[in-house]
Length: 172
Image (cartoon, rainbow, N blue to C red; front, side, top):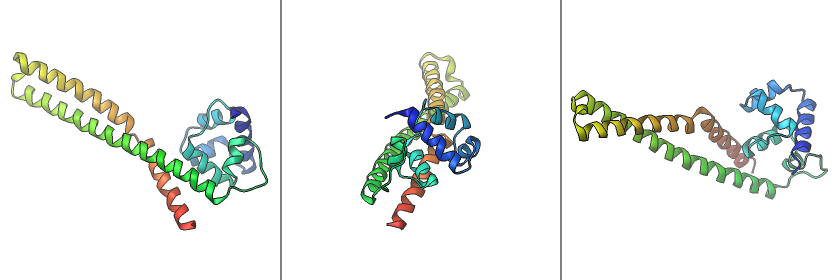
């Protein structure tokens, strides 16, 4: 896979559609800098975004991945395969998100344990002091991880996949 060739092709498609990098970035829900990285070949869009770009530019996904135009259009079977891969990817991300929510709840329970021990004045005694500190550490760690892994970006990916899958079901 020639990333530079793909990047130049993505740039060509964007310009053919009269879009600036800023406009495309806004449409795709990414930073302009991300679009620039795609077009220089230093980075590739995620599978979800490749499918969305294919739809936006009304071009074959295989053309984007090869970095050049082909005369044939993507057949339905290939598109279904790509959709299954995207769906599998979505299921994996959803599973990760559920785990992160569990960790987030564990963090909140850690904070609660710390608060209860502190408010009851037990934080000065040996076993409770260690439990409170441990709860506070777990709380901070899990809240930070939970916030990162359950950010708005992760929910945008899931929402896009739902829209895409719904569109495919209504067309088929």
